[in-house]
Image (cartoon, rainbow, N blue to C red; front, side, top):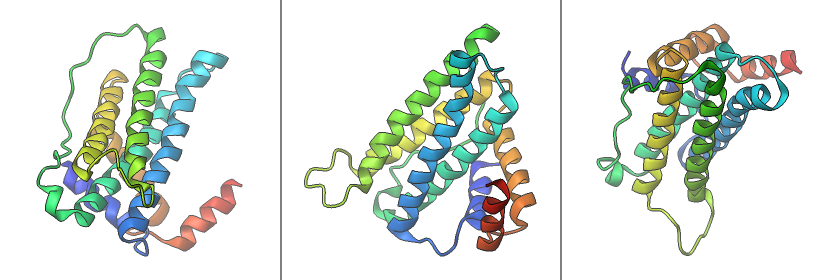
Length: 194
């Protein structure tokens, strides 16, 4: 599967009522939420003695990847005049450095912290009426690329690929929603987990 194919799938699974800046704001906020859920996994391993749950991490990475795909799409829609300067997101297999198994949670935490820093720079776009924005939109898209790259590095280090994580996410969302987003199914799921 190519990234653009996954991104097209994500677009079907996203709320179609969200458009433009409202959509971009939602996707950036949701990415922050999912990064928090992902970093909790290695944090509990390092700080509380929990087992490092790689399968749960894969699911959280899939959720993060969904929002990265949607942010990339929305930025290209909102800023077509600059989109040609955006680096394309492409699934690849990054080099893997050997990590001792007990060091993997630390590496994962560091990578996710880096994603958090990239997210903070990206979220700066959402500040209304900022007279001196820190980043132009092209630089902001670089932050999306860096998050994607870090997620890919984590995937490689836990013995998988970001493409496999995308497929796992696709399977999960298809089971939840069928072939497109449904507000009713989303609300029902929230009630089930409460």
